[in-house]
Amino acid sequence: MLVPLEVGHPTLVDQVVAYVYSRIVAGELSPGQRITEMQLAEDFGASRTPIREAVRRLVEMGVVVARPWARLEVAAPDAREMVQIHQVREELECMALRLAVPSMTEGDFQALRDLVDQCEKLARKCDRVATFRADSRFHLAIAAAGDNRCLVDVLARLDVKVQMCRAFACVSPAKIRRSVAFHRTILDAIERRDVKAAQKLMREHIQGTVDTR
Image (cartoon, rainbow, N blue to C red; front, side, top):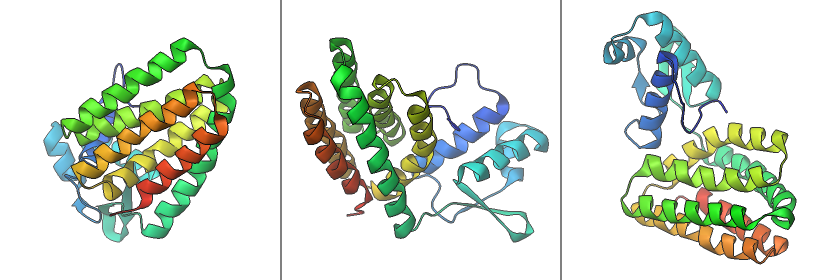
């Protein structure tokens, strides 16, 4: 994953990347807003070398855009790009359900229940960053239960863009609460081992994320 949900022993570069990324997801940095290496260096009391490496990673992730004359801006996915991201996500997450559901154990179900509870609790607190991270953990836990390392890696990398889409599309606390509440419906189908129903609900859930209303 390009930006781990949690980093055990983060380097300074990791910290800068996580700081900028979290501020974007939290809505504190707006699409198109300018950021500077100089300001980041001042914020962290760091030399420009680790800051440049952090910026390089942010650009590589697609959350920051490098413009001419060394101008840096927060990326602004347009509606078409958001739809394309979620089209890919739909297919991958439905594949994850197909691989995971038949072999899930009671332990897997309980882990998902705990994540659903955690998501809802964080959404009620209006903690956008923590809610979005817990949301990602729920989806990635389903993929992990399918025991396909390649699929988990691809979804984890895609999650960077998914969280950006959440930041731009899920702008109201009410919408965030509705979105995470949908997890419980998906989980009900998973616990019944009804793969087709779970896939249908997952598609509906993901398509709702693209809707900016």
